[in-house]
Amino acid sequence: MSCVNKRGYQALKTLMICCLLIAPSTFADEAEDKAQFNRLYAEFNELYANSEEIDPIIEVAEKVFDLAPKIYGKSSSQYAVTMYNLASLYDEKGGRVKRRAINNDRYEKDAIDLYKRYFKLLERLKTTYNKSHVDQYLQFIETENNHYGYISDITYTNKLINIAQYLELDAENMAELYYRLGQYRYKSLDMENTEALFQNAFEIIINSHGPTHKIVMFTAQHLGNFYFSEKKYSEAIEKYNILLSNDLENTDENRKNLFNIHLKLAHIYLIQKQYLKSGQEAIRAASYTTYPDNENLLLNQPSPELSIKDIHKKVPGCALVEFNIDTKGNPNSIKIIDYSDEIFIKPSLDVANKYLFAPKLVNGKLVDVLANKMRIEYNHLENNFYEAHNNRLFQIRHYNSDQSCKRR
Image 1: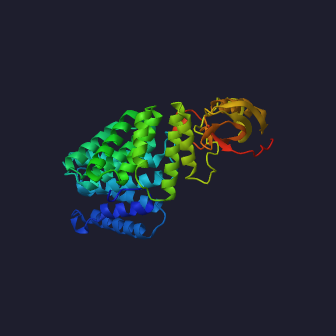
Image 2: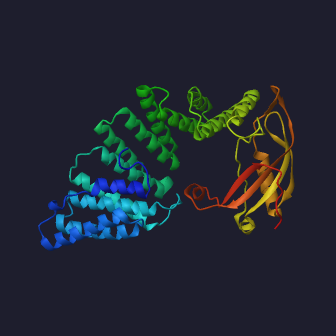
Image 3: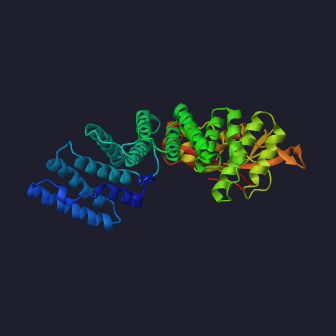
C-alpha cells in the first residue's frame, strides 16, 4: 500500500504530504479569504515540518477545514482534501491509545465521521478512483473497526473490494487487501467473512506467486488458526502443513510462529486421540523455544468461573496447583498447595480440571508425569474490546512454576 500502510505520526506526515500539496495559485479570488487561507496554509506547513506535537497541527487544520468551503464551496475537491486531512489527524490523535472497547473517544469518532463525509463527497463529485483511494479507504475501515469492534460495518469492506476490483489491482495488491480486510473482520468476530477473505487472499497469491510467497504464509497460518477455532481440524492441519513444508528463515518471529503451529497440531492430535503424534508435535514445538523437550506443554488456557463481586478486591493474586498428568494429557489428583487468598482456591481448581497437556514422551514411549506444578495468576485487565465483549475483568496467566504465592 502506498501512503497509508500503518498508523503513527511519521506515517501520517507522509500521508499529509501526499494530500496537502495544493498550489496556492489555485485558491479563490476572494482576496481576504485567500490571504487568510494562505497564512493558515503556511502556518500548517511550518508546524507540520517542525512540531512533534499533533495538537497544534490539528488546531490549524480545523481552521483550514472551516475556511475551505467559504472559498471553494462544499462540493469541491479542495474541500474534500481538507476534510480528509483533518480526518487523518483526528485518526492519529485517537489512535495513540491501545485498542479498546466501544467508547466515546472524540477524536477517533470524529475521524470516522469525516472519513464517511469525505467518501460521500468523492462519490458526489464523480471522482475517478485510483490506488491512493484504496489506501485511504483501507485506513478508514481499520479505524472504524478499531472503534466499533464487533458492530463494525461490513458494508465498507464490500465497498472497498468493489473499488479494488474496478481498478483491477494486480494479484499481489489484491491478495494483500483481502488479507488485511480478513484481519479486521477477524478482530470484529465476523467469522463467516473472515474465512472468505482469507481464502480469497490465499487462492489469489498461491495461484499467481506460488506457495512460498509471504502472503501465502500469513494467510495459511490465519486460516489454520481460524479452522482450529471452528473445530475444522482436517482443514487446519492442511493449512499448517503448507507452512511447515516451506523452508522458513530462522528469525525470532518465524520461530514463534512455528512453536505455535506445532502446539496447535499437538492440541488437534490430542483431541483426535492420537496421543503419540500429539507428544511428537510437542517436542517439535519445544525445539523452537528455550523449553526442555516436551516440558509438560499446556495446550489450552482455560478461564475460571469468577464472582466479580467477591474477587474484585483480592486481585492481584495467585494459587499454586499440583497434579499428575496421564498419558492422554489429562490432569488428575489435583490439589492446591499454596495461595495468596482463599478466594482463589475454587476457581484455580476449576481451571486445573480443564487443563489439557501434550502427552509426554520418553524414549519414544508415553509416560505419566507426577507432581507437576502450575502457578495461576489473577491480574487486573486493561479495558479492551475483546474482554469487554466477553464480560471479563481479569487476566489469568498460567506458568509451569513452583514459585509460592505471597499471602495477603
